[in-house]
Length: 116
Image (tube, rainbow, N blue to C red; front, side, top):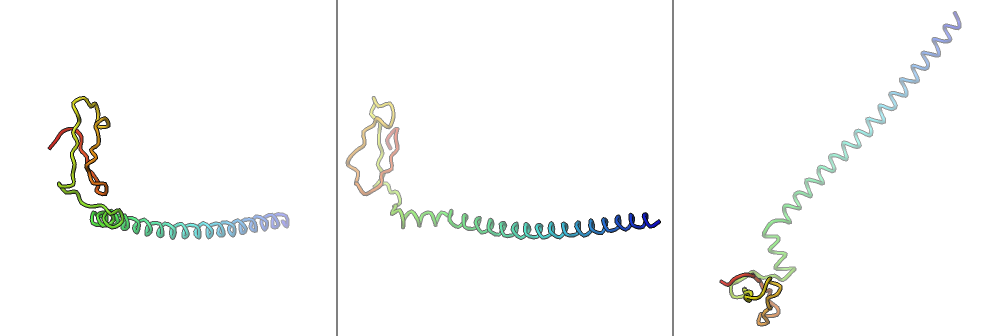
């Protein structure tokens, strides 16, 4: 009977060690889960902030402000617009001559194919 008792004692100790090991693994996995959830919350906050920044930067008023302040662009007026016409022999707009009478500092808007 002592052999049976020793065998059962070994089985009980093995089960106890197995329970301790499983509990330790469960704790480690739970800690990893909490870290992943915290990272997910942080990424969601970052994403929401980036969406807000994108909407703020893509507003028409912001684009106009940057165009006028940084790029020194001006609004198009009919007095500054120049229309180009294709000669009858020109196949594409690339073949048409570019007029030299336009002011050098003013941007020129071109439209090929017809006059207004």
